[in-house]
Image (tube, rainbow, N blue to C red; front, side, top):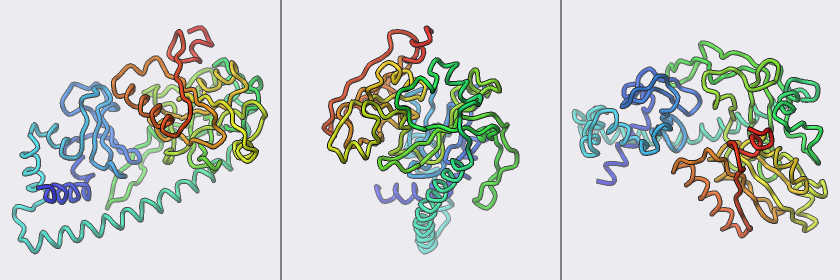
Length: 365
């Protein structure tokens, strides 16, 4: 049974885009994500229901409006078709056309699937390398943030960059940056083609670097034209985007006491206290209050699980947002804490006494 499940799963993942469009029509593909309205509850707009169409989680889904609604590619069939797992397996075999295939045809089908799977893994690795190169090229085209609406944004958020002690040059600026989350794409012959670009906004672009200090990804904060807030996009939580893969990278905001880079400090055999927040504004708020600490921003709660733990870290204080009250968010945060403990570092967590985070507290919200 296990091998049968694995074969069917591999075959479904091989044709995941066709499957997803049939099960959850009228969605939108962005990168490895396909967002759509929930197939089982009334949704006013797409956004919270996500199916992964690329990477290792291909075919998995999650409804961010309901922590209990998530699963793998078979779970997606069960959800959309109202089937149990046994029925979903039979439905999948029928959808793949296996019920009318001879043994020889099915064997050839699976050989072809495995060849494509191996080729896809190679292509995914090559694609990731190209996207990192692209991020580095984009970084080289940015301009200094001083004197721009990007600098005004940080001032508006109560964290003026010129008041941050030993601040890294972590961010730069793009005056007109496409908000690609709004772009429309079509898929033709397995390739994605943009048919309508997104709007353009001013954007703060922050470098997400790995443990060796190499730029791996970029974090974009799309801004209102005057810099006094984020861009007026449909989903305010999506005014910040990261691309490409962020696993193992973070935004290194400040150097802390001694004003040394992480490598230099480690070579000298020195360590320092480290503060890590999810967002840049939260991290900078902590940097104002505790200038002797090295401060990082993870960029997202899930990315806390993959925080680069450098030899110069003496202890870690995690800034916990007050809106992480859902069980899944609590579980992610606890797993991030446990990972740091297993690494042998003292770790603690602290939340602001009011507002969502320490930036809200700083601004009296």
